[in-house]
Every structure is written in structure tokens, then in C-alpha cells.
Image 1: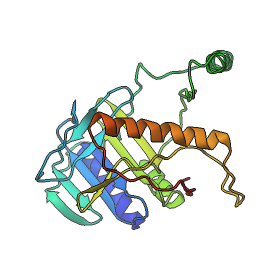
Image 2: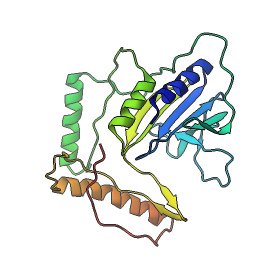
Image 3: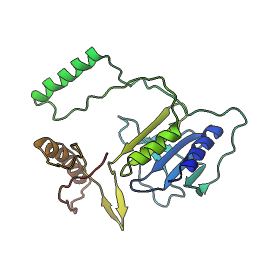
Image 4: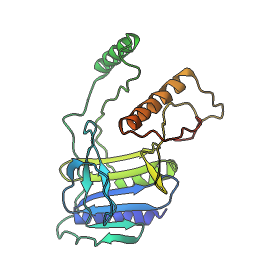
Length: 244
């Protein structure tokens, strides 16, 4: 992975002042970069044949099957332009990646959060839920080097899909995920039911917790297949992978 090239690509996006996305796929040294002067639109995600360019989607929580779709002016794979032409840089000052704060973000102090977790535990004990992720947002004021964060995440998590995007008027986001949505090879679709966490210290022993959490995802995927009348599929044995 060419770190200087990644820094160059991020710097170009800021000089142009455009919407920008970067992505490195799992177990790969190749990085893709998307430059879009047109503001990505929130629209329904649908399979499309014979596209003239790769697409980058990013979907907010609760958006169902809708996502912001990058209709890129230029797309690069490493240092090779695979679609379009890079827009001209703006004549003004370099534009930083957009910082936004959604009204839906959940901020909580310690007392509120403890009560929140207690409420979840009570409902789990009452069999209203099987599992809840008790998440919240934390605001920090610190200088952020997006290119370096992308490089660090790619180095630390080689088995994850690492991505960054910045959409004007919306905000910027960086993540690294080991969860495969879909891959297609020779018209065969593959997905993964990945859940449950245990320390990667060599003594890998699954408890009921790991089997339950993995089973929830497997059950959900099976139901999705059934809803779409997909009956002809095979299920592999459960295995342990190093994902983080």
C-alpha cells in the first residue's frame, strides 16, 4: 500500500473541494478513490446491469434500503484512473473535509447512560429483547488527519474493509469492518453470518453467548433468503476467524 499516494489522493479531494470516498478491500493493498462534484443523492439501492463506472454507496442508520450514491467524476484504483477525469482544483483555499453533527446522534452523560443500560437489562430479562447494542456518541475537539487515519486503519486491520467518505452538507465518516455483505463469483453469491466476540489469545472456546449471537445473524439471513424465494443454498460449518 502506497502511503504517499493515499495522502496525495486525500489532498487532491480537499483542493478540489468535492465529495470524496476512499476504500480498501480486505486482504488487499489496492485502494479505490471516488471524486464527485455533484452532491450524492439519497436514493433506493437497486441492482443495475452494465454500469459505466463503479459506485460507492453509504447508508445512514435507519435509512432502510436507501443510500447516498456517489456519481463520480473520476475514480482511481491506486494511481490508475479507471473512470472519468479528475475535476479541476478550486482557485480558493484548500477545503477541509466536511464536519457535521446529526440531530439523531445520541449524547448521554454517565448517569443517563447507566440508567439506559439498566433499562435494557430489565427488558432482556423480561424476554423483550435478545441483544441490544447500547451505543452513544462522544464529541471531542481534536485535529484529525483523515488520510493518516485511513492508512493506520488499513495497516492495523488488514482483514477488514476500510473506508472513508466525506459528503458536503452531510459529514465525514471512517470505519473498518470485517463483515462481508455480498460477493459474487461465477454467478454464485456468498455472504457471512459473522457475530460473537472472544479474545484472540489462542484459547478459542465458544460459549453459549457466541453461539447465540452468531445464530441470530444466521437466522436473519435465512429469513431474508426465504422472503426472496431463495431455497438453493449451502451452509458451511461454523468457524472462528480473526476479524479485529
